[in-house]
Length: 256
Image 1 (cartoon, rainbow, N blue to C red):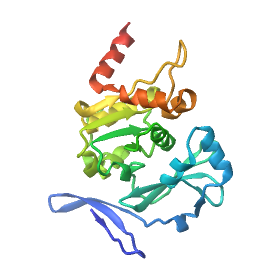
Image 2: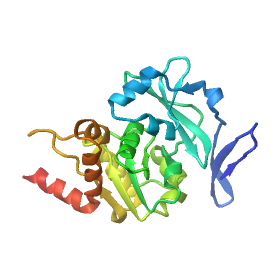
Image 3: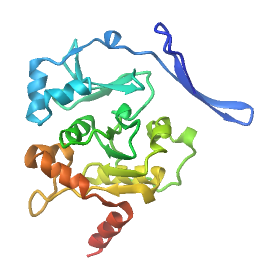
Image 4: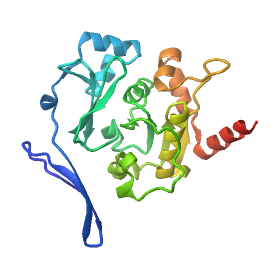
């Protein structure tokens, strides 16, 4: 792995070698707030996120900004204090990631010294978990798969859909407990399984989102925060179940 820290360079990448032959090289371009056209959040977006129970303090701590030309919410991705990417979200829930950058977990610098980590499915969910009192939370950068793959795990260099885990391996290897707080839908369950397969199921826990009514459950961390408040979200996270036990109970319910 390499990264140039010269201000006018920033070239970074990784090389995978089989024997003496380099099989694949990936590099990422330098990004900066100015080159991306970012500016501080305006009142409209602050109000929009406030309706989702995200405070200005949390937005400032996470350096959430907006894109100048279309006022999309900008979630900068940082690694060791260096801007390595950015993801954009419009108020109409349209998403786009900055091209030519490697995939990382959002909020990576918040888990530098963490022994326990919470993983969620979206940037706003990461901010929601922080509102509940947990800063040791990261989000996957690219959502969830439609279903669990029935294939064996590919080698690291070919595991393209989850390269963000391998890029963050140094951080995740130090963690003893991982709480999976992905969405309560089929893709969310699939993502939890794919993460657990790669991270080790023996150190994974899974949140059980509370029931909304007789027929449905709250979908994610932000919905719980909005509807039930930060105390309820904190309780849900603190009561996460051992992943293997959670999956076994779900399978048992499906057979009834």
